[in-house]
Length: 176
Image 1 (cartoon, helix red, strand yellow):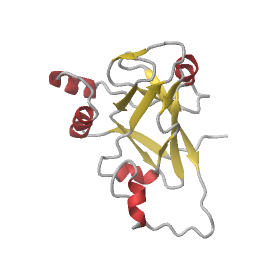
Image 2 (tube, rainbow, N blue to C red):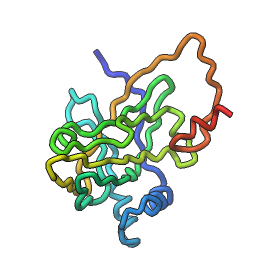
Image 3 (cartoon, one colour):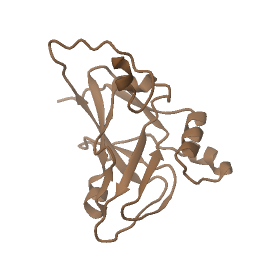
Image 4 (tube, rainbow, N blue to C red):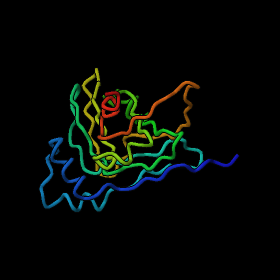
């Protein structure tokens, strides 16, 4: 069976990435932001049999202590065909070893998120839930999350007509 192609990963603009690094409080020297941006790796599958696309952290994460949380601007957005969704989960090794989790447990990237005001920038908030004192440290370029594309269906009576305006949580704004 041949895989269906329905999406493409891209970088967000430098300005979007730079603004989001500052907004979430990541401490990066101003003169290094351009270098970090240039080295952003687009998500890739590790093997021909992999379902998940590995997302790579764009900067070093020195120490995420137990019960600490960090928001990671990935510098990535995904153009996803209608009828598909990108589902993001922790890499299984990090989840197993550290109990690392995404704060929303599973990230859902809808097809219309690509055109959001934030350029569809995929931001990933992780928490170290280790209950045995383990500290998470990641180097720039380490895979930390995986994204899987899945088809979805809608009900026969679906009448959604809202248009996404913003980024996170913005679909609730379409119900006004």
